[in-house]
Length: 316
Image (cartoon, rainbow, N blue to C red; front, top):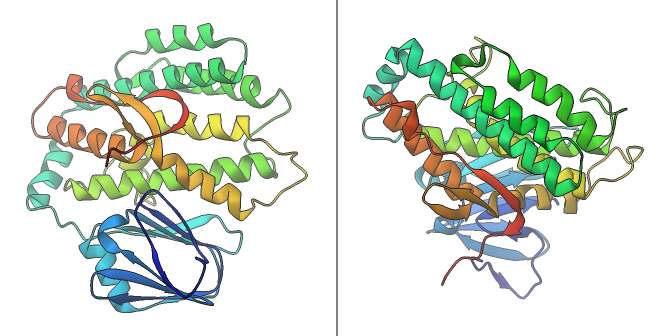
């Protein structure tokens, strides 16, 4: 884990691998190449060791040099609203050297390749939902495996929707639905928002505009492509929430819950090039998507397979 140095203090914020989560009043400033977190005491973290910062308190202030450093170092900076759910993400401004060319390629991608690429995403999502069911002991994973095998170009058979309609009651109980208030949906929403921001950050880093999606296409959504890329990662959040579920009368997430959900970015997944953290996997998925836009076929798309909740071990 990257080190955070402190001055005469115990650390008063929480850091998991490459992620800083601040749950208490603080002032953030830049000193040379480090983020300085001023609370009761002071802590420093090198910017190069940070991928994500989550601001989870209304009394957090930060300076313009911190925002500038986040852009320079490619750091995703999340804000949260009054409900403590992520409501925004600050990302670098298209630093990719060929960003304009990539955006033209996004707009020019032919319809058959677009539909086949979306089908690959849907297949992987459903396969990961089946794996989540197996890991949680829910019955019926074979049904989802069958759905995954039957997905065709563009998912014209709406197997993604059929799979989700079957999957959520199996994993979370027949009375569960995504619109109800409670800890479970709050945790799902928080985890999905973290994954969505990570996807958007990776897409921008590879020169793509997150607003131009493959399947998602809302004019009011600045993250359509991120909402496409996130789909195979959603079952990882589902798995954590299902295995750590609290009674739904406990409607508020606790700071420890939020830290754990951010920590899912460091969980191991399987990729075609080997086992790696979710954060590294998202980077590879975005890179492979860029190759498709650049003239490759949908077979180049690299997507994760769910393994469990084991944290990635980084070799020093």
